[in-house]
Image 1 (cartoon, rainbow, N blue to C red):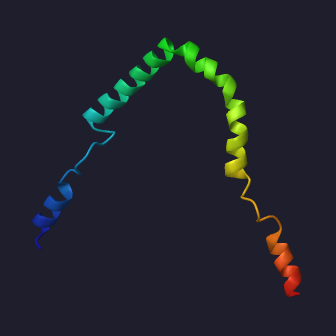
Image 2: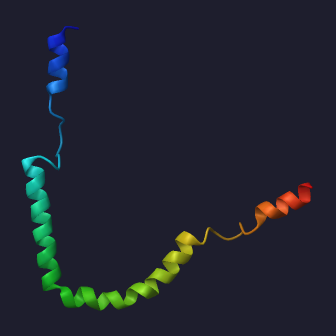
Image 3: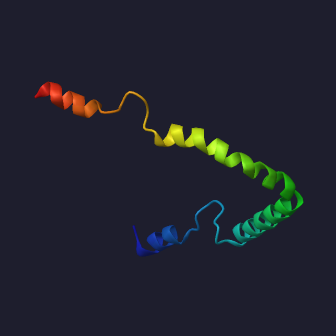
Length: 83
């Protein structure tokens, strides 16, 4: 493989949408503007739902932070039986 073939291989731009490309920057700008407009138009609905977040946080914290049932102290009980 010659040096020219290697340099051509590395010089090819990756296919797909890059966030640094012009299209990516336009997409990010559009999404920011759309998000701001949606929030300003639907502020009453969004802020009205915030009161339910603490109530929703309780079961989510229990599910994701509890560690599951049946695993409490199982290591210490197994160590006592083995000794």
